[in-house]
Image 1: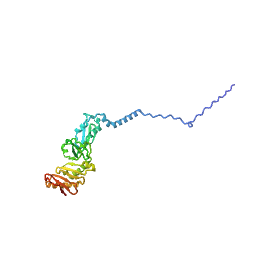
Image 2: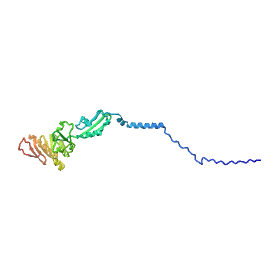
Image 3: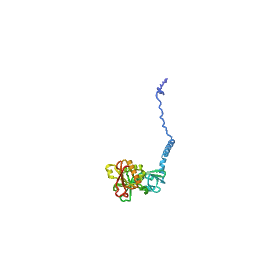
Length: 298
C-alpha cells in the first residue's frame, strides 16, 4: 500500500504590518482656478484702468476745436496782435496747438518780458503776457521812431500804446544812439531810474513837469556810476543834480522854485544843486541879457 506523503506547503511571506512601512500618500491635486473667476477679475482690472485714464484719454480721443481764446496782459498788447503772431488756423483743434512754439513766438517781441500759453479743455486757449513798462524814451537819428527803455535799461519798441500815454514818458539824452538796438540793455539806466523814482516819491508834482534827462555815458563807463544827472523842465532849462543825497537837493529845488514863482522869474536858465549847503541859479534870458548866476542859500 502506498502511503500518502504529506506535501509540506512552502512558508508564506509574512504580511508587513502597517506600522512597519508608511503608506504612500497620493500626490496632491493642483487647485485649478475657475476660468469664470479669472475672466471676471481681468474685466474688473481693465474697467478700473479705463476709469483712471478716461478723463485724459477723452481729451485726445474726441476732437476739441478752439472756441475761445482767453487773453490776459498787464500792458498795451491786444487780442488782434496776439492772433496775428500765433497764426492759428480757423476751426483748429485744441490738441493740435504747439504751445511751446506759441510761447516762443510771443517772447520774440521786445516788449514782452514773458508769455505763457496753455490748453484749457474742452475748448479754450489761455494766453498770458507780461510786458515791459516804458520809463524813458530815446529818439532815433531818423526822427521817426522811438526806442523805449524800462527800469532795468532794456531797449524795446512799443506796440499798441496810445500816443497820449507815451507823451508823458520823458526823453533821455547823452546815449550813443547810433550803437543802440532793440534788445540791448543799458546799465546806466538803473542809476537814472533810482534817482527818478526817488524824486517822484518825494515831489510828484515837481517830477510831473520834468521832460528830459541828460546823462554822461562816458563818465558812467569810466566810474561805474552816474556822478551827475541833468534834468530839463518847462520851468528850468537845466537842473544839475549830484547823484547822491537826493532828498536834500530836491528840498533846495522846491525852495528855489517857490521863491522864483513869487518873484515871477520863471522860467529859469539854470539851477546847480551839486554844491553842498547852497545852490547857483541863473535867471532866464528874458529878465536880463547880462544876468549873472546868483548864489542861493536855502
